[in-house]
Amino acid sequence: MIERYSRKDLKEIWDEKNKYKIWLDIEIAAAQAMEKFKIIPKGIAAKVKKKAKINVSRIHKIEKKVHHDVIAFLTSITEKVGNEGRFLHKGMTSSDVLDTCFNIQLLQSGKIIVKDIDEVLKILKTKSLKYKKTICIGRSHGIHAEPTTFGLKLASFYEEFKRNKKRMENANKEIATCAISGAVGTFANIDPKIESYVAKKFNLKVEPVSTQVIPRDRHALYFSTLGIIAGSIERVATEIRNLQKTEIQEVEEFFDKKQKGSSAMPHKKNPILSENLTGLARMIRSYVVPALENISLWHERDISHSSVERNIGPDSTITLDFALSRLKNILKNMNVYPKKMLRNLDITKGLIFSQKVMIELTKRGFSREKAYTLVQKNAQKTWSKNISFYESLSKDSLINKKISNKDLMKMFDINYHTKRIEVIYKRVFK
Image (cartoon, rainbow, N blue to C red):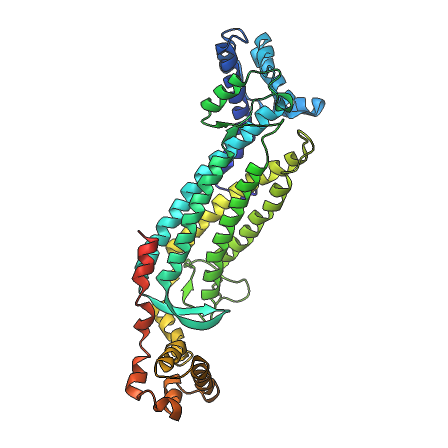
């Protein structure tokens, strides 16, 4: 992933030096197990741990000759360790190291992503409670519908990210498996007790059946979860972008005093951070399909998944970590304009109360179809004659026969639309 969209902790997880360190730790753990079960001489693991050094450039140099990354790694370690290096990797296959390491890296990344989500949840909860009774227009199809509150919008996002946290925790559990089962996964040349020892050492579960690789349906679920979280990020970002439009201007991203919006137009304040999140979400979702396609490998293994995972492993997790951090900061610092929300509510001159009037007409004896037609006719007059909805209704003779103007006015109470907000809040913030 490019530096612009990378944060330190995730970068370090996917750094080559860290990868080789995990490989070495796996090999040492396997050697410790083999010593315990008297498969190799005692003292090998301790000596390897003491003498082995990770030299990335040396590994690359050897790999250019042998065209095999694990062999290059083992050769470089043996150069440092000496003759005892021959006991490393006994009965193991490359995928035992590669897959167990990959899962460890994904798990390390996933735990940070859960913490990122916790940060987003914290901000969403604070803001949702703050704006619980801040009334604004709800829109369907981009058109004014009925009133809601800005806090309720944020509560919806909060509940979604609660689900995302559970999804990520489940994805972490799904990916937390270890395979040390040898060629084609039969344990022919390695005792299953070695696998159990290594799994316990890294706080992983044993993969029940690993062929020669850990099954990629686990990884497909993990990357699909990242894609879903990215979709949720974009949902919030898209709402902010829409609400920042000049003709709406109910919310806007924080704009620094020295910040510039446009090279050509000095007046511009653009929602660039939210737009950026939309782009990053597209990237993260694009990794889901190749992860799904990795499920189907030839026979017990091939390496068609390998090049895919070398890209999507670091890129998707690093990008999502960055996106969640950026989302948190947008939400924390955004400007909210309740007065503009109230002004926007009045744009349609009371049409937002159309359903309340229709329901009341049905209570007074009109069929639903007749009530709908009456209300729609008066709503259209409001549009065409640029008069208030109340004025149009109050002059309708059919409505006058059933509802007094005094009762009609009572139907235009904005608080009618927020009377059950507390029920929703109790569901969300138990």
